[in-house]
Length: 196
Image (tube, rainbow, N blue to C red; front, top):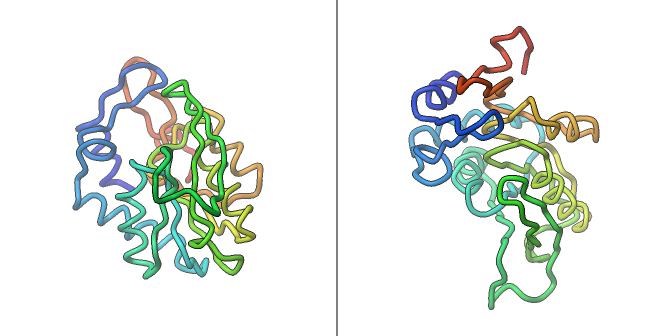
């Protein structure tokens, strides 16, 4: 997605060979116009998958999920990382390790929002090691529902998450796939002759 790639090049900051900071438009300050376009692109890529719910993880996945769900005409559910006084019974839970934050979170979704008949689109802001997406997929499985696909805003293709998810049979659609962050420069996968 060219618009997203331009945003990454113009407003992203490479902090190391493994870390890209995109807080200017995605995961701290949010560019609403960009999110509208991201949502439309996810809806286009999954339009034939009969999506009934969009599932994401709080908080950075909420904006792109909302826009995709709006175009798909379905509700959004976000898994909570923190305990809530109102979210205590009949929970579907999974443990997710964050390599960025070096911590494990237990994520939770109320069982009443996922039915066995649901066809779920999982959306997340980043894909690096795949742990968040796998945790969300395990919640879908616990509900007896189906993961129709996984939509990722930015995939760090040089890490193993994308391969892990695809090897496990998931349809993964990433809007920007980064081949490398070496030398402080963002190189997209398409630039080196590899497709989506």
